[in-house]
Image (cartoon, rainbow, N blue to C red; front, side, top):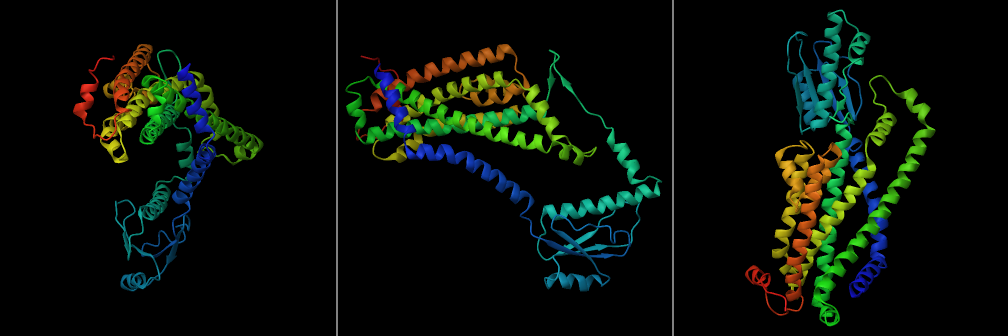
Length: 424
């Protein structure tokens, strides 16, 4: 009953804060805004570059297109004059094209006062190669339409597992990476939140009053569960927000579907078709339930350790840094293993990371969309529960002693002694 009161107090205190409401509403907006900003920076932030071309082969004139903030100007002046024009900032670059053999491999010189950037250089290279390929096709008696026919009916690969289920590597990659990333941030953010809460109550001497009425273990457990409920509340609000936006997006796509289908060409992927395949081929219920399990299991495991760290800190908050490193390191290692697991879900390293309790929440969620054997899921779940129980018992021993200890700098050696002290 006392633990329930602590859970209620911890939960209501946090969700009623103005900062909770602001952050709950603000984070999705920030995420969407960052997505648009990244898209803008990736596509629309490149400054215009003017490249003057001296084409002695007469092969590229009027065939290089001005696009992607890249402008071509053709001049018949000498190379020295055009290089000087670049030095005088009349142009950003000078492309020298000598008379060359169309069937041989050649290199053209691109001169610039400052680096034009890899995107601009790639655009220039792509356009030059495109024109040269067309010229070689004409020499071989082929037309552009012939090339389109050759490229149109290409091979597509369908992946089928031993159960006859169709796989989708791209969607599995996206779901696995997204799930692992979310768990990585949640365990860090809410684990640190538990630690700060314990530190605040200890440094303000509130913990002394509370432990006079409840056992330290009850106080620690109440805090962990209370913060977990806050995290779930926040997460459910974000899910609802995403579903609303997704429904609005699909409604818009449905409204303009005819236009989109008419605009599609043979070489343009059908976005709606791909989205429908993704929705139909993914077992969202299974992924959602496993995500909830690993979210709670990983959080409880690390929250207990962070609570123990919070109980060790006195007036100087910097003391927590030496104790948080051994806890934070496995989370970071789990994230590194996750990036390896989504590239090769069945490698030995991926399997180990998905079974080891300190890394399994992140790594296993990255593997689940690809399909994981039942025995590995069961083993991982059992080990995670056992890991949570073990870390909670160890953290409780540290918490019970540390929460009432003031004015003394605590060392790892002393913490080791606490772990072997029998409860009186």
